[in-house]
Length: 490
Image (cartoon, rainbow, N blue to C red; front, side, top):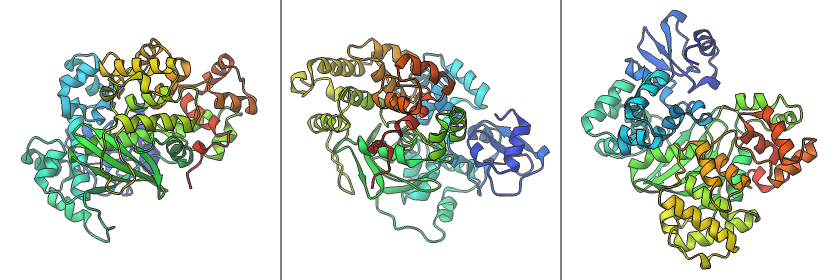
């Protein structure tokens, strides 16, 4: 969008928050870059240039605006709606792969050379993978500076910088403030009491957001010991590269309140990225709802509660295991099966606020489980053990950089994986916004009540009008039934 100057200027003039994250406005006279909704008086048209990423602005020598804080914009919805190599690379960078494995590791995951990835990212985003990762490190550093009392040296290494000097130079360059000045600005005015070891963050999103189905689904399917709904917040444990964490997420009118406990602050970037993916916070609800509303049979559902998101997951491999456990059983039975697996094979952890007890077991931990110990039909035991073995040995990879169609083919080749299981994994674990479940009982009942075709083939044909947002259409169709997944828990 940043190449459409006239459209970008209109968005800036109207201070339209819907475009935050789509592009960034750099002002030639002040050398500052802003989000489109920045509250200051817009500059003259001739003094504005537009970039596709904060990293591109920083590389061009612009610093972040202190008023609108463009580095905290919601992410571009493009990266979650596309399956090409650039989108997959961006999802992996957001998950910290460049910091952990370098550019060669990123390229290897995508199946390209490092030079090809560099060229593709520069062509579309105006910055290479190192610059994009550096921009993300700067934002992580800012969060740690403003929300914790960690010494600056610890902040530097936790944010992924190789030295304190590089950390200081980057913070000054990006924010035009020294790290100490950032902390001093954040401490002005009244502040909520701070719990030691817990970071309180605000996760932005594009309005509207309907929290009912999002948190209702997560709470209704919560695995005992790993997830819970308590005091208006969805809480769960997180398995992270350097340790574990516990997060509490609460819906607010203009943001998601996030309380995060980490055993190692180096995991902050990954934890935030996974929480945003879990709640689908980078979606563009205006574009989604606009297309679905064009169908006269879906329009009343969209108008009743616009802004529904697709509840996703913090770990694709975990969700795949849970999808198999949930085959042809009730939500309560699926929770029971998963809870037994957690108790037997999950790693015990300490929850600083009490209530959660385990991490969900990794595929490696499950690789040696005894099938006879599973209270499942024999065919489902075989399905589960085959899946776990494929995940453990790396022959099946499910992560942010996975090619959606390739993953579908690999899952379909496993015994016991029918269209429903494959598509629900594509929808919630891989994040494909066009995944669809025409064989799902709830969707077929909704289709029949709305006057849509109810047979899978006919419904799939009709759903072509909803592409590429069929996963969101499914969320609206599920609301036809009065099920706990559709309502914010009491």
